[in-house]
Image (cartoon, rainbow over all chains, first blue to last red; front, side):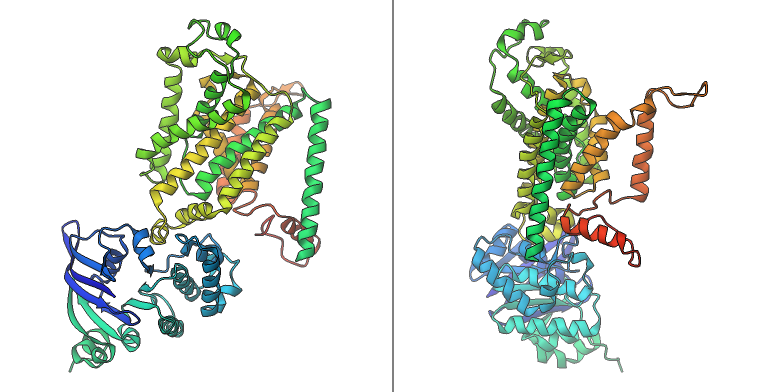
Length: 237
Length: 362
């Protein structure tokens, strides 16, 4: 279980997170929704070690992660598919996937996981020799998720997988997220597309300007009137 | 596919054999010809260009310190291999210098790589934090500073100040630079195709994503910088042998630009491109375009501009044309492959199809 307690993060003088606490139980899909600048990506980047926190604690299975370098976080079993996909455009699909397994040295395991990723995304196998920059947006997102899975994570963090994709493609990505979760990978999903995210999430947190304002199961928040108004496009009467 | 593999292997072997026979022929019958010296210098520049390509093309670090590292390599080699009995003559202003021993050629050649590598580590500590143009300026500055320091009178007992270093161990055969460069380039290719190489390319493409994959940016940039300097140093030592004398004055920033030009013409991110580029460049600058520097009387009138230095002017026009219209160079970021060549010729003969865009595929 990933546990965040009273986490404060600031960029220069600006407070991005003002003491948030949340839990990601094993085997579940947890989503963090909120508007632009609410601190969603900051949360994710702090967990992965790309951003330093002011105070608080992040523990994964009782192991403190705060202040640890990125490779230690990855070794603990937390991988991420960063915002905006960020695949390596001049590397082939296969090379991209191999970079995902960069910290691993078990050749057989890597081979097995490569097969697993190809099973999840047959499209990637078809195009394994192609440069990642020539893939479509949806395929690049698949590659970003596949690349993150290549480190064999127990917890996968995804930052806005629906960003800039057509609705049909987004549906495909969310189906895959569910499949990955059913195969035993815990998912922490950060989304602006609250409707889709809440539908597949077991638990959901709402983040507003650095504070967690609401918590509940996905279905609960989906039915919540204020959430509907703020994020799901229901008109005020 | 299997047939192709067999065919490609066969073609490669034939090509290698043809090259070897050609080199042996040149070595035996045209030992002092222009052709031999172009081949030797081309092989040396291939190594240096590939080492710069490792940094510029594969790791995305824009460094202009290559001539500096070459100079350190050349000096290391020369200082260590001058026979003890000739030292008094070479270091005539410095009482025979302070180094009073002579190392075997191969050991000195390896040291000519290791010493620049140590310098690269020292410089890399502060400089590799910089990006793009700033890194280029800092490395260029380093090369110029090193050139000034070597010529300083106070270090004369070691470097012979601004006087020539000569009479050090030398090669005679045309094959020698090919063998050394070949081994070094093979090592670089192995590095590029390994996990390290993938990490370098990932850093080039997207630093943030590379970091998110657990790649240690500082460590890998330093590795690339040091590896590149090692081979630049070996290349410098070979160049010293080729010229059979070393003087700091020859390792100017112009030399770095020459190498950069080779890398750009060959294709940034292509090993075979760099090799082709360097032979082409050296052949043009040393041989085929020499006539541009000579006054050429034509029906009693000298053609304007044809005088010493005009060649360099032509080169600057060439680089402008390359940068403006042929950004990808000869090979782009592709490597030479038989399949690519055969496809290219196939397309050339089948006119109804679209003309091939690149020489090679994959």
